Length: 377
Ligand code: SF4
Image (cartoon, rainbow, N blue to C red; front, side, top):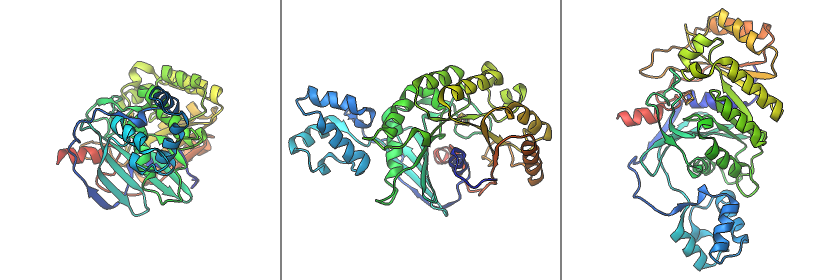
């Protein structure tokens, strides 16, 4: 097992966060605010707004610098802008539209935020401090329609897609938790929701994340995780930016995958793998496959052999994670013995596999569970 960081490390944190500190805040929705969410805009769109309002274009870069580089949340603090412009911007735009509904901090310095949205919806996002890396795991939807049977995020279906600004705002909220000299280094779209079901807004948010005037993070350090929606994977490939793609497989055959990831019934593993192969051809980026190991469900030796058969001739990294139980769901962590056997079969089958042990059993640790448990209270 390698100890190197991978996109899956962030998922591990999403599902295995040992909590040492938990803070709650009001979860009531803030008063309705009709101002435009500035984080919804690209630099070009904001430049257009400025020129249409008689302002020089260069002000856009100044404002973006204050927000993304200097982490300022208030137009009034943008001291190199004329006062009249600051007032005009404050009247027209809001920078932060959400609020922190709860924060959990683990012993290893990982922070998990429950973000309360303006309409009362809630999503989760995570900051992981690992050596010099500062990685974040971000949500793309309120809830999820994919219905993976072991996942807390999808238990109640999907409410709506997040806006570009709501996705960017999670990134900024997590960035704000860093020390002044620290920078975000990696982003994983692996929180609540299926990012490819909200592709346009996810791509917009990631444009902000990677642009020099935004967070300046290389696409090679950005991963989009999906259950595998072939038309959207093809659109992502056509987009031409070489993001990393992580495909959640979770089962090595059609019947089992359709049980665990119901959307598979309409798609099929072959179509998912073919789309992933096309993405690899187009981007040149090594593919990641994810496999949540459920005790007594998908952890048998024959499953490992089938999985090796599917992946052995592909340029992939397979991330396997033993399941972290979610209250109310019938799935359990696999035994140490079945984990060891599963791993041995994959390794001897020639699969490049990263296999990690669970870290903790804290309440609210699984992705989507913090939101769910708070709502139940
Ligand atoms: S595992 Fe991901 S895709 Fe599946 S229901 Fe949960 S959030 Fe959605």
